Each structure stands twice: as structure tokens, then as C-alpha cells.
Amino acid sequence: MATRNGFKDYTLTPELKELKDLVFKKAAEAGLTHFPIEFLLISPRELNAVAAYGGFPQRIPHWSFGQEFNNLHKRYTYGLSKIYELVINSNPVYAYLVDTNSFVDHKIVMSHVCGHADFFLNNKWFSTTDRNMLNQMANNATRVKRMIEKHGVNKVEEFLDICMSLDNLIDPYLTHIKRKFDPLDEDAEVDEETPRRLPIQKDYMDRYINTKEFMDHQKEKIEENKKNRKNFPESAERDILGFLVDHAPLERWQLDILAMVREEQYYFAPQRMTKIMNEGWASYHHSKMMTNELAEDCDIIDYCDMHSGVVSNEGSSVNPYRIGISLFRDIEDRWNRGAFGSEWERCEDWDKKKNWDRKLGLGKEKIMQVRNTHNDLTFIDEFLTPDFCIEQGLFAAKPAHPSGYIETTEEFREIKSQFLLMLSNGGSPVIQVINANYENRGELLLEHVFDQKTLDEAKCKDTLENLFKLWTRSVHIKTIEPVTEADDAVSMEPVKLREVIKSFDGKNHAQKELGAYNG
Image (spheres, helix red, strand yellow):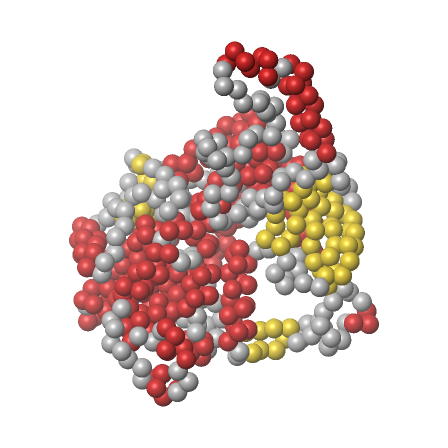
């Protein structure tokens, strides 16, 4: 069967083509804009296969994707889970329809996909992503297969294991913030490794002003400064994978693989940063479109059954679909009623606030603006309210004392704090390189940016070991950990913290205490 962009040519049925045109019309009426969308009709097994690859038909060959496929397909076979839709952020957008779904399911999925496609195009956090990543993933797969042929499957796969275990060590904000001087910028700093010549008015005067003795002396000063400069890089580098690509003593093929893993992680970074918003936006619009003429009378029960499953509040984890759609609806309602601003916030009359309605009608405009500019962290930080938490039944869990007992609190401050902590850096610790010439021995010193969560001991050791394999010299990390004293095991006093450096030298793990941490 012919392929295009790695996909088999899965042609939609005439009925689905007609539905697609209708959904696009309704999406346009709702104000949604997006790149062209290509729908592909595939089997559940094929959907689980591409889901294991993150939605792509081809990707770097690695055993973890096969393992993920087995897990997904086993759960589908036993009726434990089912994937309804997958969308690729590309131009055109590619989305999958499962051939065993009902016609009502196809209506919902197509509407949902239009919401995602609109979000991909308009949200600023996706503005720097590679819309041609579909082809880039396929090229990466081909290059890695050639490396396997040249260097052997075990050697390449072992190195891939190392890189993929470190794939979260990137800076998700890197592509949105200019951190380095442009070499073409007239205000850029002069290269410190280039001898500086004294300014001259006439070219013929150069040999008399910038003499050989003067230039040799300048070179000596540069070499002396390089010897005395212990900190490298000069400022903390959060993009650890990028730092390793630039400075790790690796072979060319290894650097190529590390760069591929880093490139793919930067593609997926905006999706991790906007999971709640993206799913909420898509769910909001599939709900609007289905209840506004798209769903026929005979579809209502099936639609409600599927939609309620999507936004279910069952389970202990946060459902991004539910929180996202509910918060968008809350924002729309508040801005329609004018329930925002200093006057609203100062009002202490509960009955007055409950019935507050200035009939501003700004809801649709506001949620469009929010869709454009926010990510999950800022979305929750700016728009989560105590009333919303009460309505959604949100609560926070916190340790009562070091023995590990858990209690719950309905205090808004605690709920919001735990939400933001969960969303910050995708829940992963923030790690950065602060010195690649630690103690003037070319060793790598990292720093854990402490956010009241300590590092997982086992994961920390694994990370140090894998970083050592790339850096080839001792690797250290400065972090904060609780003081573990037997007498304090059931104490109700605040947990004492200390600053330590954990190290791995290629054979042994070690730890050095730096002193008490007072925050």
C-alpha cells in the first residue's frame, strides 16, 4: 500500500468525509483556526502502535517503545483502557480515527481534534515547535538504523538507554527566551579568547600600536585568565542535554544520538506544559459543537456516556480534561458576569457575589486570550479560585509529620500550592549545570533547585551514573535533604534540612555534608 509521510493511505469512507466537512464548518463558526487536518482511519492495534511512539508512525528504534505498545494493547484487549484520539502537532495536522468506533464517537473525536489543532496553532508556547517533526522523526529513525549497522545493535542501544534516561534534563523555556548574545549583535561582548587590538585611525599605524610584543602579552593574559577561571559555564545551564552535546567527550555518532533525543524532547515540551489547557480547550469545543446541532437526538445518550467518561472525577489523580474544561467554563462565566477585578475581590457579601452579573459578555473574548498566552502553570496560578475548588471538590494532601502520616486540607492556599508544585517543570526536579570544572579537575557539578521536594535517592544515583558515562569524569550534585536522626522519627517539630553534595566517580557513590539549610 502506498505511503505518505510514513502513513499508509487510509482513505476515509464517503460518510466520514461528509462528516469531516460538517465538523470543519462548525469549528469555523466557533472561531477555531488551524492548519489543514488529515484524518486517518486505523485499527485499535495500529492506534496503540503509534501511541507507543508518541503519535508518530516512525521514531528512533528503541525497546521502550515496544514495551509501551505491549502495555497499551494488553490494557485495550482486557478492556482496562481505550484511546479515542491521537493528534500530531504538525502542518498539516494528522489525527487518527479508530475504525471500530461508532459514528457518534467519530463526531466527538473530530470535534475534539479541531480544538487541539486550534490550540497548537494559536498558543504561544507552540510557536517555536518544528511543524515538520513528522519527517524529522523518520529521518532520525533512518540515521539510528545506519548507526546500528555500523556499530552494532548492543552498543547503540546501550547508548540510547543512557540518553533516554536523561531526556528530561532540558530547559522547557529555552526556545522562548534569548539567553545568549547574538554574534551579529553590535552590543555583544567581545570574545574573551581573542586578543584585543588597540583602536587605530589609519591601517598603516597598526604595526606600530599593536606591536608583536603587545599582542603576545595579550595572549599570555588570556591564557592566564583561562587557567584561573574555575567556573565553567559562567552562569547556570538548565539545558543539560544541550551542554553535553556541546562539551561532553563523545564520538560523533554518540553526539548525533544525544542531539536527536534532545530535539525530540523540545518538540514534546510544550505539550507537557499545556496538558490541562490543551485537553480542556478540546473538550470545551467538542462539548459546544456536539450540543449545538452536531449531535442528533439519537446521539445524545451515547455522547453523554462518552463525555462523562472523559471528564470523570474518579480516581486519586487530577483529570486534565475535567479541570481544563471546568476552568475554561468558569473563566467564561466570570467574564460574562464581570466577576473579576478589584471591586469583585473586595466584595465580602457572599449573596451579592453569588448573584453578581454586570452583563459584560466578555467570556468568549477572554478564553480566546487565555488560550493564546498561558501554559498550565500560569493558567492555574491566575485563574484558580476558592469557589472553583469548592465546586470541583478539590483538596490537598500534606504530611502531618516526618513519620509519614497524611492528612487532608481544604485550605485554598494549600490546594493551589500543591497544584503549582505538581505543574512546575512537569513535576520533575529542576537540575542545572553550575560548574564543569569543579575543583579545577574537569568534573561536573550540578545543582538541584530546591522547591521543598527532595530528590528520590535511587533516581538520583541512576542519574549520576548515567551522566558519568557521558562526561567520563566524576559527577556531583548539590541538593537539599532532610536530617535523618532516629530520635526525630516521630517528632512533630519541623523537618530539619541540610545541604549536601552527592557524587559518583565511576565506581562508588559518596556524600559530603555542607551544613544546615535554612531556606
